Image 1 (cartoon, rainbow, N blue to C red):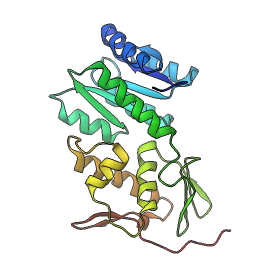
Image 2: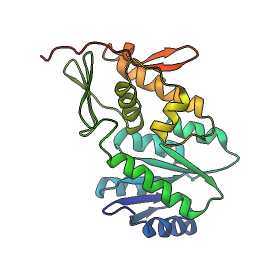
Image 3: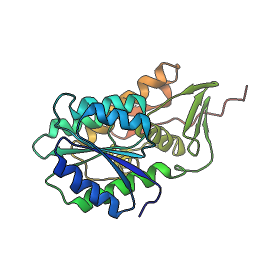
Length: 235
């Protein structure tokens, strides 16, 4: 059970927000609810939210667009609720920054337990606890910061976890299955290979802006690798 955490449940169906909200409360969450994107964004601005549980199908501002908007402004875990038949929405949502998804119909306790796991991973100290240094890259899992050559790189939660995992295992190729388990916390994610590939692509694009794309390499037939570069001197 978690304590001191607030979850925002966003669904245009009041019955669904009630069901999911109650399940989250049984696991110790304080729950806020919204039935549209505008209300959700206002609650995020005015409350300290630790997790968003978001329905994909909503009128006006759909869940995928809202997911992207939240990810651009806030660094917090996002869980999608989606219909089983909408596999393309699951992939699109994860590519836009969601951290997990649950398909409908679902058991409310499953949502609550997976929400609990997301928050615990977010609160955790990271792979190694201490700052990781690879070449000119410095990753601090505890402070959730990344710098390269003294310049700070702002990363969404999932991409930060991905970078930290590769840095902690620098010099050792990581398969997409390894990354799926370590970063997304599952070995059975629909379209998992594409989800990992898209996350690596986004991470590499952010690193490229600092001329650091070489820190995440694709190894054909093996997966992804951060090379074991010697630490750059400070200053």
